[in-house]
Amino acid sequence: MDIQAAILREPGGQFAIEAATLDAPQAGEVLVKVLAAGVCHTDIGVQHIMPMPVVLGHEGSGVVEAVGSGVTKVAPGDRVVMTFGSCGRCPSCAEGAPSHCHDMRTLQFSGGRADGSPTMHQQGEKLNAAFFQQSSFATHALATERNVVKVTHDDVPLELLGPLGCGVQTGAGAVLNTIKARAGRSIAIMGAGSVGLSGVMAAHLIGCTTIVAVDINKDRLALAKDLGATHVLDAGEGDVAARIREITKGGAHYVLETAGAVQSFTDAIACLTMRGVCGIVTVPNHGGAFDFSARELLTGGRTVVGVLEGSSVPDVFIPQLIDFYAQGRFPMDRLATYYPFGQINQAVADSISGKTIKPILKMP
Ligand SMILES: [Zn+2]
Ligand SMILES: [Zn+2]
Image 1 (cartoon, rainbow, N blue to C red):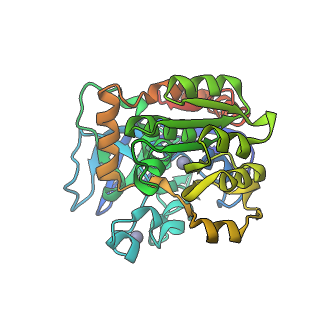
Image 2: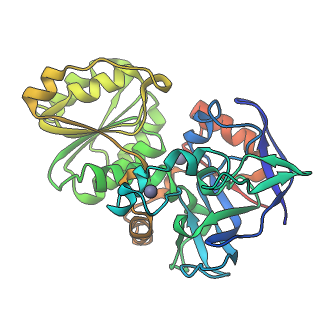
């Protein structure tokens, strides 16, 4: 079918919205008319590893238009959020950990289906798409039955919900699923972007009594306080780990590192209390190493754990977050700024500069 898609031809380049053709859904696939799609830092960070030209976008929401043979989870007319792809058969998927699917690289980043075939073309030439099994920077997206989640609430704005498919479930899930934060305990959250602030909301929701948000952006720290942070620290003023140890009277039970700076990783581990747990959702400086004290991990019984997609089982976790939102306990709308699809380059620029926390593109 004929669609409009935002095509990127070189890493760091401008997106161009152009005509393209999308395959009809094959067995197990779901065609979604995209209503809106969030911009996530991964759309920016992966550009240097993706084959070009590519259609990105992996926080789409919309309405099912058609389904391929064998699809029973959703039907045309259903409202859905699209999330990351997973195979359903590997050891991780079999154990209920699809965010660490063994086929993750192929399903998210190969530019095609699991079998390598392309889903999108332009004038007969292959476009790299099927990004996170959706490529939702387009008017239509081809997903799989496994990575669509049905939205059963009629009274929630569907255009807001796409980021539940990645950034928001990553921050909230890191706190609720990976770290399994408990009421009455302390947490420090490094970085008050969309992932960090989703973590703040989740920590507040679950009843953490000390929630320290750390950033260099004063507006974001103010928002973190609104969303439940009990303390905020300007990282630009230094001594972050020492100040967190003081606030938490000896160290935080949990730390969530979302900032991606070497100093932030160092501080994250240095401010943990005995047997504390640090979840990392990013890497310092696009993959660089950082020093930490193995002795501090050993003698303190501390844990550092990598978090992808908030260890989410999307069909279970995304509906829970929608319930929390509908009850007013997870105000993710506070993170969002809407842009028309035609302003995708502005939305990406505002995400990079930090002007906007969670840009969401609305399709025409
Ligand atoms: Zn798998
Ligand atoms: Zn993402």
